[in-house]
Image 1 (cartoon, rainbow, N blue to C red):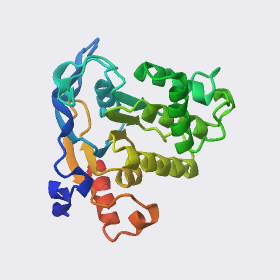
Image 2: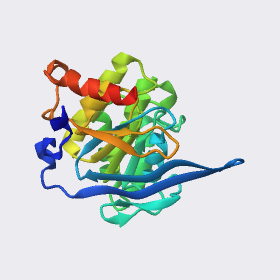
Image 3: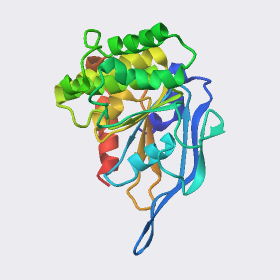
Length: 271
């Protein structure tokens, strides 16, 4: 099992790729009536261009805090975060976020919700070009016949599809996923995992996914990052997942080493 932890088990699409995301000496502190509470401390993380990384850990270990810091939505207490060699300064369209709740504007249609970001990222595009971008990604997530449906008329799973389309339509450098399937039933969850991977495989965007689901973390990722429990949480271990891409769920589950990977992650979480 030790061999599975080594970097040479990266999948071929990452060979020779530079780092897209670097977190160095990262720290997050919250003031409390009893003094400072250190959520993250001296956290080091490097993610390559085009890599898909899953992050797992116990509730409260700071996974979502880390993600919102990368997104620029949560101030950094110490250290720094660089995206494509430049330090982040607040939120920006180079980092698209898909949250557990899609947070759509309910009075707008699926297309109009995607269009909000497209207008900001492609200000010089014609109206027809912007509409084409929105329709392309909505079609990719399976909503090709639902462009004009208002968000309020969409199921929770369909709303999350809009959220995924909206994120990819921004053409970001990094896709940030904060338990995007956590509120969905198991069937819908599996369907959207497949949808996400299909689009990601084409776009090759660097992706970071927070999840509580060990099986999901293995199925999606090139590498699974395991965080220690807080306070003073940091990266505790990592596991490289060498399954070939594009991935087929059945092939992954039937791989002779799949349960070795799964057991390794569960053992980490149980200690």
